Length: 205
Image 1: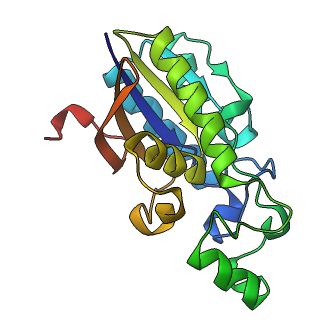
Image 2: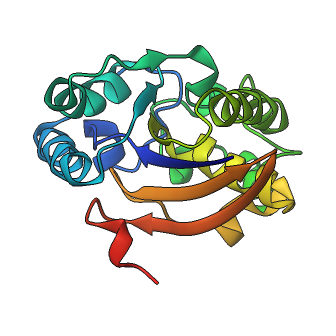
């Protein structure tokens, strides 16, 4: 049976507003992020997901809470949905890193990921594992998952068979609270929408 899984990026934080790598740093959403969480709640009221999952990081929990309270659902928090740890880049913009580190990362963000950070290939493995678990557990249902920018892009590459090394080039943008809709059926995955604001996705072709 088919499972429709909609992944939402969490709302904006102060560091995301400044385009700083936030990764494992557990920041709250800012005032704009609060409004984005409300927009996600309004979208969820119309979409009526059957189940909610989220990263246990504060910004993800704050983003999903309004929708959860409105729907009367308790989100399943799973550490496999946490953001990639960016190591030495945490709290910094790309331009603030040593030039050699920044250049190597831009050329191949998987092979030359940030020093001290998580290997993006391992992050892709863990998020694919929980994604398949969600698909199996909620067959025939609609699921909303709140997670993180880099993790979601790695997942999309992994499930579509795209090179992880190209995730920044192939998927250059995913806005705060933006939605990605995937269809899961017996482990086969199809992409139905990407980087869509939280409005009625059924209106999309």
